[in-house]
Image 1 (cartoon, rainbow, N blue to C red):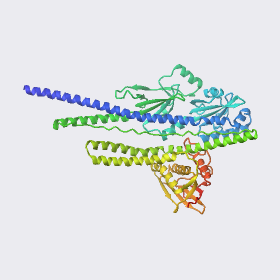
Image 2 (spheres, one colour):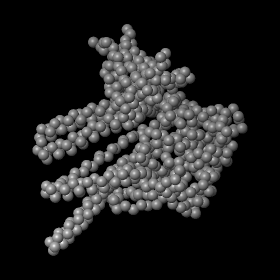
Image 3 (spheres, rainbow, N blue to C red):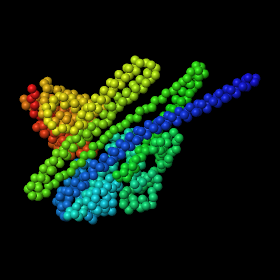
Image 4 (tube, rainbow, N blue to C red):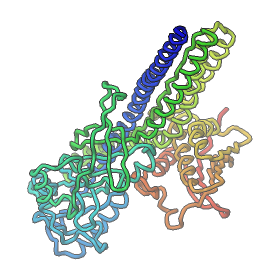
Length: 613
């Protein structure tokens, strides 16, 4: 009886210790797993936040020089000095409308010294700015003081959010007006969300007045995180920054969690709305040039699911460990893998252009000035060619990242397996894994070397160019993009080698530009094919690049090689085909485009044949 009592107490104690051990294992497992998960989400969020800040800064800085360049136009000054001349005003309206189309700005308009808009790109719109007084706007006030100014606000006529640029028009050392440019914030939001933003992230940008001015979530826009001070409320009303929009606070509160590592500069937030509540992992970064706080929020639903999975896993492992101890008295080791975070790299190339104007001076001064202008134009052309080349690489960054990420993932897997085999002294398998790793490293080296060679600046020295070799190099550069876009690339080379005289790097850039444009034209096509063919006449080499896409509109076919002409729904300035046209002309050749009767566009390059002994 006493023995049974002791046994019963022992069973109770054992059961109690097992339960305590189970709870402890669950808690420790959650602590380690959740902290690792938060570390991983922090790395991914930091990378996405850096990309977002870089993207916004590049977009805003792209338009900095446009108002200044326009302010130097003689027509601008003439309209400000004689605003009652309807012919000049109409010409200026059309000019502003053309510039707006080329730069993809929302609106461009001219304001006189009294603050009245006298010309605008939206002159034919029912909500035109012409006749409106913007003198109360801070960006107009600052520009009238003689400096470039920036401002963000909700438009008074259309009620749309925009970022504004303003530059003074100066005549005889006196400010006589202001050139203003508006960039649509909604366009920036939509473009970033479609092309860069990961589905699991949300972003919002808070202005210095504590108002959420930019966000991919419409319900968060024009809200505040917390209450506004009275001084900021007065400034918002005085400046009419948000027109008649009602600014309400967003119901956000901090959430504490001991699973969140202290060393990461982040926090958990709870967002409450009438429809639902959600919890997010929040990071923020200051954009110093405009004093904006950029916030990146990511839902914690995947973390919560991972927590549930951790509970199930830890309970199963603990019970299995108890069974192994009871029946086999062996140790059980539980290994966990950390998922390697994926980094997204994207670089934006900033392209700036400026107009050169010459004045009538003495003959020797005019010659010297023209020589200087020619030197500057040559330098600018070199920079535009290199910038367009880097822009092509930037447009292919997603496919490059995908192509590189697969070998990197395999490298990590083989490396971990090799370590495990080494611990088990399985040397043959270790050797096999190392051989696979070397192959993957060679594959990565080939990928990087292709783009490294393509991104080099041209020496400007013309040499004999093997046409087939250049085509293969260009196809190698775009093959990753073609693979992601499911485009079939076919090359039909000439039976005998073909040679031309020119710059190899620039010639390959032309081929890469044409192939990239062809793949973009096939984005809506199900069966995507691009065919490259080479043929010879007695004196010339003919290269044809044909796609099976929708072709080029008849109204646009004579303009595709014009500078700044583009049909793409992005913020590009349309320089790729213009630069390609100049490169082919510098090689004493011609480039033409036509539509195939069965559909698709055909770009034809004709170059003088170089005879090689």
